[in-house]
Length: 121
Length: 491
Image 1: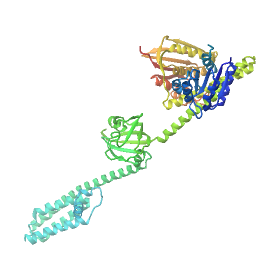
Image 2: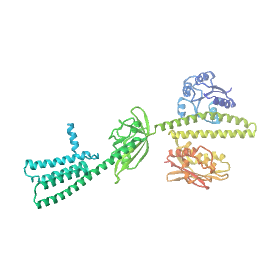
Image 3: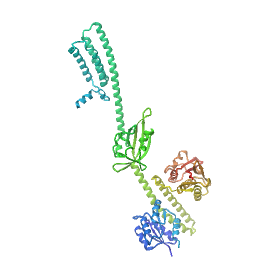
Image 4: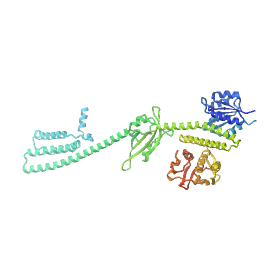
């Protein structure tokens, strides 16, 4: 069965590029452009991993992260948060995210992280 | 009461100093009155023409001194003439014998000369004092006008630092009228000043410093919390005023309002910060797209496509570095660059960095020599940045096929890293400037490489924040050696 990943970002080019890269690696990708819809999408899709941008228009990605990490059904899903501000790393880890990735990153770096969390058990 | 004090003021000889108003009629009338009174006393009351005697001489001398003081030389001379005239009248009218007459005339002439001398000396003194007082008053007025016209705030204090003059700009900038006698920096109830975010003490006051040391204090930045709630940023410069003997007699402080400049800088920094972060998102997707494409193209054995894509990838990386440099410059300027220090082996970092850059160096070889097992306590990533900057510069400027020696040594409790290239070298006058912000060698004859001139500035600031030093030794046409030092790690 294919691994499923949900990506939340308000920038379409990032969503598009990430989908391409991840699909190439054999993952199934669901993208969310609006922060408000992220939580619902995760509940419906039940992904193996979530990629979440910190700076979303409208909502703070960290709020979504917090909610995901507090909810019974979603808290065990590995969460990787992405931001152009390396300074937010600490607050992201405090929210409960497993990893933080600063933009711009290499695709190899991203894939290494994802593989670490989606190894079949 | 008012009339009395007016009369007293009119009669007081010293009260009119500096006025340069000399009365002619006043000494004339008073001296005539003295002569009439003494004549009335001798002939009317004493009924003895010779009874005027020594008293009249005493009164005349007093009147001459008084009037030369009050009305200058003119007042003294008028008094003298009337007095001498009266003496001659006495000699003429008293029916003296021949010898008595002669003695009287001679005595009068001598007295007259003495009186004139007295009147001239005192009158001259009075007029000189007048001139001096007026000159000082004019000087003060001129200074006052200049001070008031200046676009900056000016405070002038005495030798104890107490304000005795200020201009209207001071009030406009500080939002409070500085009372005479106030010591700036002493009373926060009148003026709240902060330096580097902390309330400023009196010893930080430029005025107090210049009075204590006698040396000028230049452009110290303070923040003023105004009573109306506004915060203003000021630059204070103070200079002590010395007299001829070198004793401090006063001090002046210039208050420059730099709030607007600060706000503009902050807005610029905000903009650079925001723009750099905004740039990061497209760079990220660009990198992801390129990586994916590269991976796919590699399967097709298309040399040209691969070369093109590698070009795109390299340029994207360069773009990323530029964005990072921009962000670093912005962080440095806003003081937001945080160092995460740890203990690590500097020699290992040098080897790793050199290895990573060897590919980019092509046929130039980076050769590391020197101490091994050198540990430092520093921010590993930031020191890596400095090394990378030194090495990429050396690669850029080194002729093909040459070695790039990298050395590491210990000296006086410091570790020193040097990177040498055999490039075109840097002219003496430019050696200091290359570490300045956004400086570029702009000589059109020089074959230089493009860039925003941020690398060495960032390196300098990083090294500075590690209490280290950065410098260059270079000779035109022979090459350059860049150095940086870090404090040795204490065991």
